[in-house]
Length: 338
Image (tube, rainbow, N blue to C red):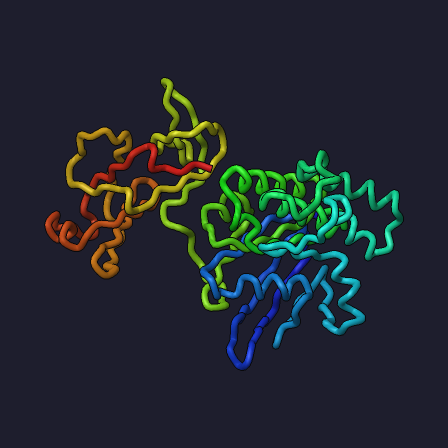
């Protein structure tokens, strides 16, 4: 049932040659949710996906699936693998037609020929490839190959769909297409989706919840200047509104609920309001100061915590400190909306 816990991780450790690559006290995932796992290379993202898809067993700890502890013995695990499917970053497709690639998982499961074809065509329709069922897989583009791999997984009707960097090698249009397709799968079938990505903006754009891994351990925190709100239009310009208040100008085709992010390096800090081509100027009080090498990270309360980076020299020249009043200026084109 949607909303109930479908997968839980409890006291998980995974080691290779005495090197611990995962050390997770607890994680849980709800049925029907969309989740992202983020972190740098080597953080343990792929290892976690392989364990959650029952392709690898943990060194210590437990995985619970639908409330039952997973037995990683060969006989027990084969049945569970029917409910969880992992799509790798570079999926392996057979040198045959698109249709035969998608029906393969169903054939392995003993599904009859007519039912295999029906479910494969339905899955290909979901990913927008029903018109190329007879094409040879080796002639597909990278985006098409990724979508065929996802269709092959969806055709088996998994309860949990895991994806390892599904858009890492794709251009922006194909990335958007894959994200929209995964949303459709999630909403149409109630499939729990968990994917690994190095792209924080994509993670927050797509998922209901983000798990950040660093050195194999979950860590807290969100990216700087990531806001939830609404894009509204007024006097021919579009604003990003937070908590019902005017926030800042944006350049976007989107209207309605959205997320927006501003790179702290794109923000100019000043003691007085600047006259410039930049449309956005927010005023607030410094509530946090942290030196990071040659730059200073300022957290400014503008109604929401807003982060800006300035050089140590500029910080000292302006004689800034906690409770200093400052102005933050940035261009509307510096705001990413999704």
